[in-house]
Length: 79
Image (cartoon, rainbow, N blue to C red):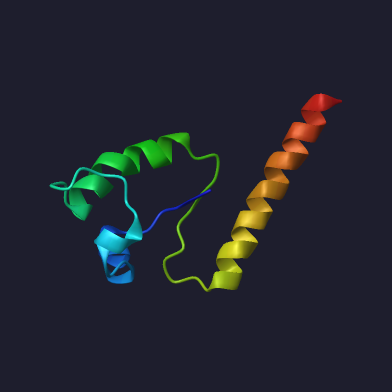
């Protein structure tokens, strides 16, 4: 599950990149890392949620709904 948030939101949420444990070269900025990785995350994610403006409960509900949809599709192919 990929939670697709804008760079500005992530920058507000992550206050200390050094203690966050981000695997990146020391000279790479957070913005550069975001731009490099976002296409990978969106390309490989089975489920992508855009949580902007949603509560935690709404985000969880969307994740659960998409997981159920994927599971029911998988189960119907197994029959």
